[in-house]
Image (cartoon, rainbow over all chains, first blue to last red; front, side, top):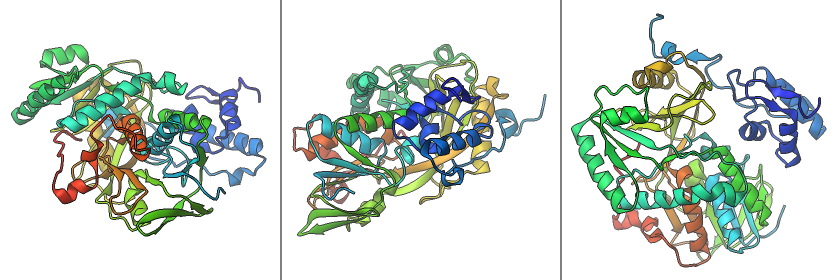
Length: 90
Length: 381
């Protein structure tokens, strides 16, 4: 994995950007997410959170299960505003 | 763990970090911030990102005006891109009563040098082209209102404060504040005891509890406010859209996502539950698609919530507790804490260092409730 490797595909966040935050002392998934937007896109981390957890664990020399994960919130997958508003399909 | 400090700030949100930065900037040493989780993990990082000067009280107008002047320079001052975006707030009037209030507000705002003015529904549509103006009587518009990234702003303050020598303790929870002869003497944390004569309650949603730790009764409560965000889409409009009578605020951020929420003080849970409800997301989607029909196919990717820390008059409580020397508060912002953080952080730093304060902080003291001198704000969501 080099600095140009994309970790979060939704928000185009590279390993280099994440490593920079780890170097600054931000060691939690939540801090890295809040600063870099990794995991904030349409998939809400369903693709990148595991990759990110493993990368943080490796950087900190810890086990993956010792890194706390972010809160998952509704909706489970993206839903159009019109559908949520109860609109019938056109 | 450090054994003593000149000033202990409880809360690593935007208030605590702004206070720490403003104190350190004035040369104060030995400042520490206690944060029970990580910076911006509470209300600061959950807010709607907006800042506005369109209020109904002189106090809020002046505080917001001064805060926004500081925000305009903050990216440069803190050497951190906080995504400052000044594209205005368009506040829609749907009732005659509301319009009468807006006329008063605009007059007040203009008298204070804020460039707000009333616009017709046609002019509103020029500002926000996809806007459905049906039932809109008029709108109040201020082009120097806007939004800024609350997460990055908090981290920017925290980093700038640390460069000036402030020590930030993450995962360190204040548990008790000790005092002798009505004077603060120490803060007990889950990592040990810190001797200090000055403590600042900047605990956001937990302000009341951090009062109780010192036996201080603060008349605030926390209440859940919910919010949602969509996927990023092509730029559609720039201003924040807001209504008090129809109860909503939402905007498209520079990033492309649309963020918004509404207040529901009658039904929303009081306390610290910050879960999400179906009621909120479906109601908010109806409000949004009615106002901007073109976004009906834009997908919601997340809903979340955070706490408003409500004071009896929806204005912050700032300053020292009169019966406990060295106990300072920056609490009760009632939903406006993020946008006021630059100015409130400076005011509190001036107050602690006994400098002359540029703004009337004495009117925001906790004693105003006993004196019956409340400053009721009519224009809140």
